[in-house]
Length: 334
Ligand code: PBG
Image 1 (tube, protein in one colour):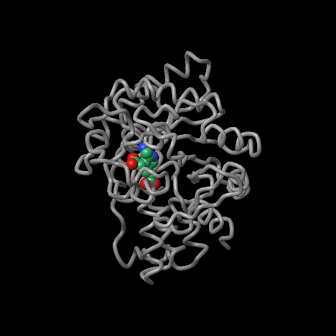
Image 2 (image 1 turned 90 degrees about the vertical axis):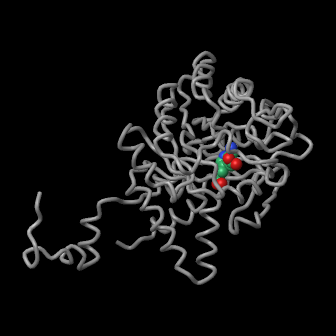
Image 3 (image 1 turned 60 degrees about the vertical axis):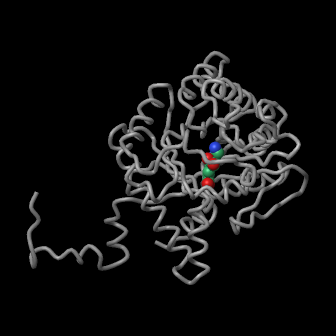
């Protein structure tokens, strides 16, 4: 279609007033687009602020429900849980991941009974449980062993499903884990538990504050490039997504967020499946740091990044700013 040219067409007519801009908006943000990640710690009555994630804390299980209720009241449909495992429980074989009484299972049970109207998504990966900080079990050389890890992940998913998790989200990037988890869930009678695969997860420099939050930062030897994706690649992301869908993923995720909008757009266009973006810890820290340095208005920076995900085609966004964003969206006077 050819647009009439100036002066028959004046694009500014569509931008002239708030109501006109609102009426013509191509994409909209809503609290139901957001998933709130929450960090959990041991203890009672605890809130532990995380230095590298100013404004985000770890909460003990007894205080978690309060946060989940706030999220639900603001219209956020789902929370994602990440445990900071006690030092003594981190082992080479990550066996605490399979303990039905572990921190994340207690958190799932608490939220599901106190705030049943909110969805609970749980991370499947071994890094919060390993003494070496890798997402799987390693061999003598420090390489993560794929198939051995997948067998553990499938059990980890069952333990979380038994505790009441609604969505299992494997974030480990092992080959074949979605199929193994799907089959395990099906066999054990959890056919209604959904899988959101971290399908295109990049080996990113933006995960630093998260690793502080779950206590895996100091212990990680080497990096995760032998399993997480190379930031140079996007055709490979499409292959990863195709495999995860074929293995039984209901939804896929691209991670990190903003630097990978091209990947979100390609995935959504090619597959048309629910596609989530994870605005990760380093992105949160960048927004907060920019605002603190006077480089921009925090709320405006936040909403602009979130609408960018929608524009790229994302179904929803995991963001540590979910509560603030939902408050802003609920109070918007339009
Ligand atoms: C662990 C996991 C990571 C994140 C989510 N799950 C870190 C990693 O892969 O090292 C990062 C999230 C964030 O930075 O906010 N498998």
